[in-house]
Image 1: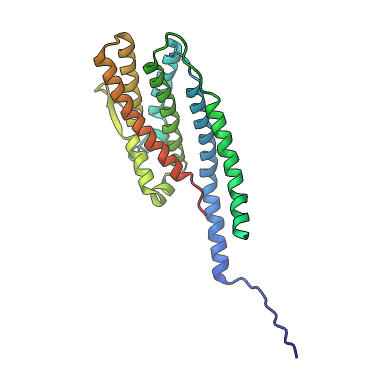
Image 2: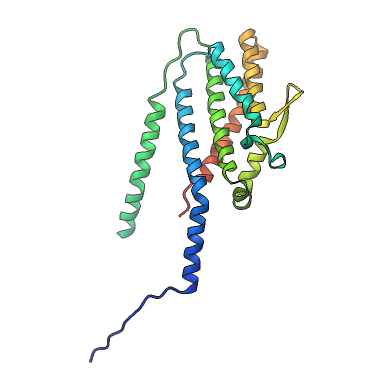
Length: 84
Length: 149
């Protein structure tokens, strides 16, 4: 006397909503991940460049540094929320 | 047992990645050129890493400010603190993180022009403050880029 039990997997509305929410979250995070990876690589490259520095900056390097720094004042990433 | 296998397969790529990053950083360390002032070079190294670190977190926050404001308010608040307009030389408003770097660079130039005890002390103090901001920034970058499991 054996009995067979069949189990069927059906997606409940809650599962579908959870999946949809996960997909939406992943889509929302994609630009952040993309930006983060690029910035992370740039950061590592800058740290490496700093570690390799053996002498003082030349006047040209000093000027380039200050120009690059001052140019950031108009960069949207450096503006506070109230100025956007 | 299964858990052990899973953990191993997850940690090996992480270890390889950390090893590669370590090699990239450590293999680049070089000795100072003769005549180079260690305080000046250390200051310039800190300025380079500060610029890159501030840039990284501010651009990550900039990618979706609303998302960070809602989901990581302390991080966004820290970014806003770094963006706060601050007067440079008492007249030009610049973001606080830019002002910190400009002030340290000014002190470095003053020290190079006249290597007095007062100038070296002022530079060393400002460098410590900038270094603290860099450490805090790096901590935030570690927190916000940590994988969520």
